[in-house]
Image (tube, rainbow, N blue to C red; front, side):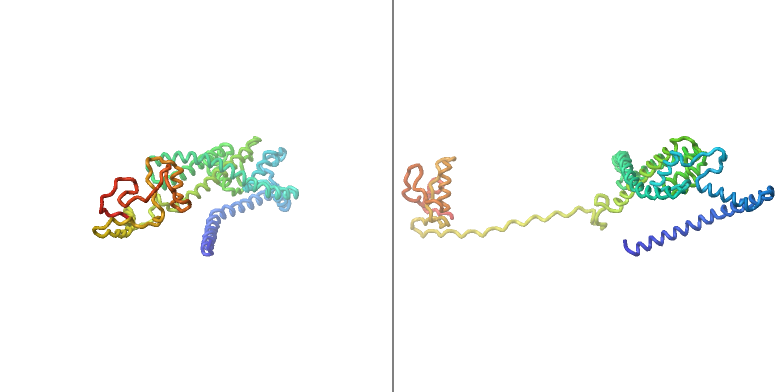
Length: 376
C-alpha cells in the first residue's frame, strides 16, 4: 500500500472518530450531568432527613457501595441473600468472554493470582478460539454455499446476469444470518431478560461485534445453570457465521472487481462486436523448377540410354515376378543398392547376362516403341 493511500485511510478514520465523539458527546453528556445533579440532590435530602448521619459517613458508605459494584456484587438484592457472581456457569461464561475477546467487564478478576492466570489464559485461549472459529465458519460456509449454489442455478436458468446473481446471493446470505443470529435472539432476550426491544437489539449487536461494553449482560437475573453456556454457544456460532459471510463477500467483491472476458468485452470500440476476420490462406508451396529434358537422340540413330542417376553404377535389378516376393531377396537388393553388399548375380538360379535394353521398361511392362524419349 502506498503512503498516500495509507495517509488517506488514516485521515478518514480520524475524521470518523471525531464525528463519533461529537455525536456521543451531544447525546450522552446531558444525561450524565442530569444523573450527577440527581445524586447530589438525593445525598442532600438524605442528610437533611437523617441529621444523625454525618456527611463523611455517608460518603464512606457511597464509596464502599461503588467498590462492591466494581467487584461484581449486585447491590439491588438483599444483603442477607448472597448470590456469587463466580459460580460455575458464570465462570464458564467469563472464560468464554476472554477467548472471544468480547470482555463484557461486568465481572473481572481482582486478586493477583486471578489476574496472572487471566493473562496466561488469554494468550493461549485466543489463538485456540481462532482455530475453532475458522473450522466452524468453514462448515457453516460449506452448507451456505450449497444453498446459495441452488439459488444461483435457479436464477441462471432464468437467464439472469451472473453479476446480478452474485449480488442476490450475497443479500440472501446476509438476510439469512440476520434472521437466525440477530432477529431471533433479539426476541428471545427480550422475553427472558425483560429488556426492551431496543436494549435487546443493542446487546445482540454489541456482543456479535465483540465490542462488549458490559452494561447489558445476559444471565444476570436468570438462575438457570445452563442459560449462560447456551448464550456462549450462540456467540460462537454467530461469530463464525458472520466471519464466513465477510469472507464470502470479500471473495465476491474481488471477483466483481475483475472484469472477465465472459461478461465484459476486452475492447469498447464499435468494431469489437464484429466477428474476427478470417485467417489468410497459407501460401502455396513453391513449385520445384522443371527438370531439364533429356537430350533427344540424333535422328536416324539408336535411342539414347537412360539419364544418369546417383546409383547408375549399379546394374538395375529385374522386376519382381509377383507381389509378396521373398523378403530376404528384398533385403539383399536394398543392401546392394546402398553399397553394403555386392550386386546379386541372379535370382532363383538364373544368370544375369546383360542389362535390359533401353526399349524395355524397368517395371517389367511392354517394351517402348522405337524412337520414344526415355524419362529421367
